[in-house]
Amino acid sequence: MIFLSVPSDYMPMAIMFVVSIGFVLTTIFVTHLIGPKRKSDVKLDTFECGIEPQGNSRIPFSIKYFLVAILFVLFDVEVIFMYPWAVNFLELGMYGFIEMILFISLFMLGFLYIVRKGALKWE
Image 1 (cartoon, rainbow, N blue to C red):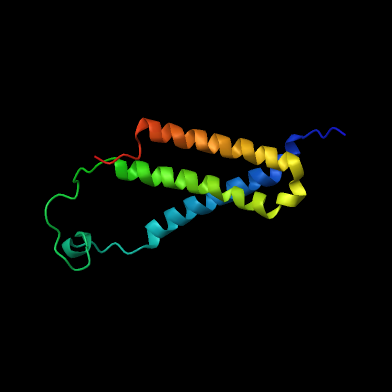
Image 2: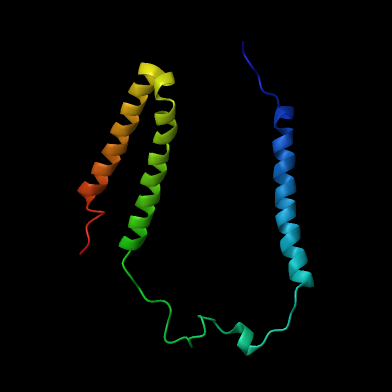
């Protein structure tokens, strides 16, 4: 059976999108209008747990921290996909097993690429 979608099928999504964007813009605009406008040097000063700020906060540091964090999130999310497979292992049968072997192979291929590029090496 062929299911054809018509533009009216997407109307609820369009309405939800318009309402959500409208809510965000209205909230930003209204809070800006009715919010307090008492500015002073003390309120505009940076607050760091009661410690007086010293020097410049724009200290350069290695991009490795960001790289490791992003790689952790990437591989952590990929591992999360293995949980539903493990729960439904018997129901998926051989097809599910082959699919997971393919998934793990691509997962390991990406990991080996990262290791070969030296992304996890610290100098």
